[in-house]
Length: 371
Picture 1 (cartoon, helix red, strand yellow):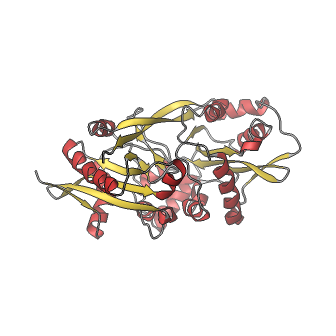
Picture 2 (cartoon, one colour):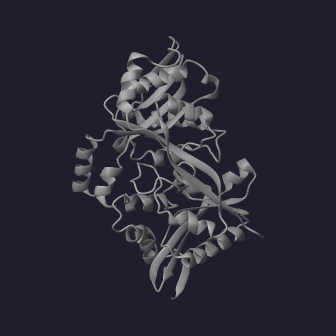
Picture 3 (cartoon, one colour):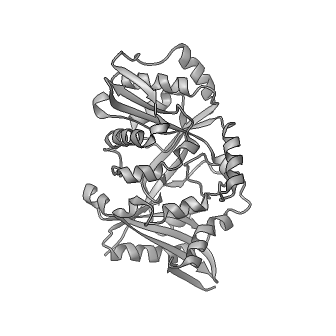
């Protein structure tokens, strides 16, 4: 068999890079095809403001002329500035269960990273820390929820065979009986009640630019000390929020204010993955009509992010946000989180307040690159 690894450089390469998952997961009833147009938009340095300070290279391995493995490599100068570490990050990794194809693919990716001074290659990040992160390492055989990585059990084994080791374990938490929990909260809200200085309001989606600035400011401060977190620019947040109205029902983006000053944010989205599966990676007027009609019947929620500014932690703000969310989320049957570090005791405790328990685990892998 003849193997060839090359950097994506033309339209044919890009097409093969984008379409490889569709071949790999053909026949898998649990896989949710990504919208190809969105993956293309995300990986376009001319459109994605994240790449104003980061470089991107896409690698594709073909076996006998047929795509067999792919990955992306990102190097962000801001990461080195904040953490003092020259690291590269891989993502969008997909591959057949072919150790040779994966070995040749990562040999090229590692050489690319090493040539640019990187001493470590970590991933997957698709393409950064506020996107899909990690490889699924348990809970196989069931469909993923929105914003959740999905891969076969072979992927961790393929990476470990190349010397990659898990450095961070992440988890999602879930409550499949969320409606029952909300009914209980309604009769006996946990924690301390909010005082008159604290108000919680829904974000005004008709004034989205202004509201996004408030959300960005709160999250940048709330998550400043989190692992690998880099503050988002105004342009990055606007780029990520382009389709916010499609996945977020009115009232499920909550802003907590203390004496009129933003103190906390909770952002929940619909689990739209069952609807995305029906789109089969494509968009169009008729498909969008079906999506919008189907969205009304979604009864599963994802807590996308929740943050409280440092001065307002361990105050009445948390109780006020929790109660407001319980009221806004009535009518939903199940709820879960995006990824949480098990070491983030505050986030885990907050999820446990809503009777959420660990559901699936994911791992970020890394390998030292010898000079």
